[in-house]
Image 1 (tube, one colour):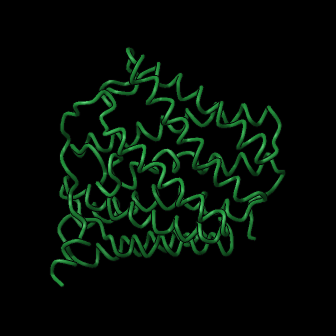
Image 2 (image 1 turned 30 degrees about the vertical axis):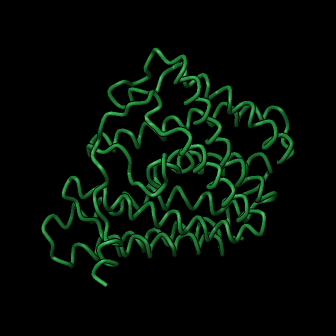
Length: 293
């Protein structure tokens, strides 16, 4: 029992260390892991968008657990139990009754997260509570836009595009960055991110937008171009934002759950940044309005 409790208790990830490869990853293992993850998401979407919502809830919960461990490197003890309960309720409310219900649930969850820590009378309780609300907003508030896509027309294609366009952007950035990268975008934050790699992100996003946005969703070439250009910008900004946070905490990855990839948050950071913009673009493209189901 003690071993189980120790395993599920948040703990700091491995400290930042120098990588031997140019990509900073074990590429064969990373590619194999990516394929498995894509298959799992594809199967969940193929059966019913409901199962994607369930899978997303699990992913967000793991991400919050990882964040709780990462914050321990700065002696910040966020209340992980109410955070995970809150994100589960947020995703359920969003799937059942739309984004407005998800936002309202976040407000209650944020109060609960703060109260849990503050009334626990721990040292630095206010900081712990505020950081817990930040983590819940970062993962949960961004994530419910992805869950809300399960209620849109062509929901499966909307979700697939959200998953695979940022993945294509990341792949293109990694590929061209490895072989051609010479000019860092922001070396102090992420020294391996180069302008050449960003060009690869734009190229791969453009190629991926054609089957998913034009053919899958049936949107015109104008919208295909919009998604092709928006994706690499948002994905890169999301990657930089998490890199900045990880550098502040002195860690390489937010976790180690995925071989060759790091943690859950390392895999979904770009998706979380893309989800709100993608959802709003879908609404405009389909001529829909925000509201309850």
